[in-house]
Image (tube, rainbow, N blue to C red; front, side, top):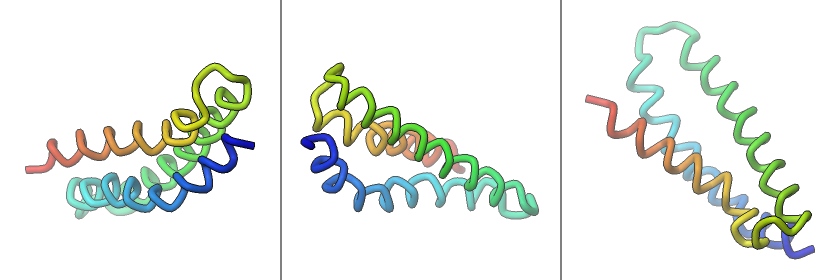
Length: 88
């Protein structure tokens, strides 16, 4: 139950992670048509998969419940920061 509790604490911060990723994608694909939309849908799916994997490894005891719950936020924030540094 600890992983679920920590996941409930971490889930609201996923919107900040999404904003970190969405802003550079919007700037990189201004006139790209639906490329930005398709990429966003793919990233949302990948976030869901990462969150599920994080919870699974936390439930199995491979990492601490806190790290398991925050792993997807941390990894997608890092991706967002890398994308932000790529925007001119």
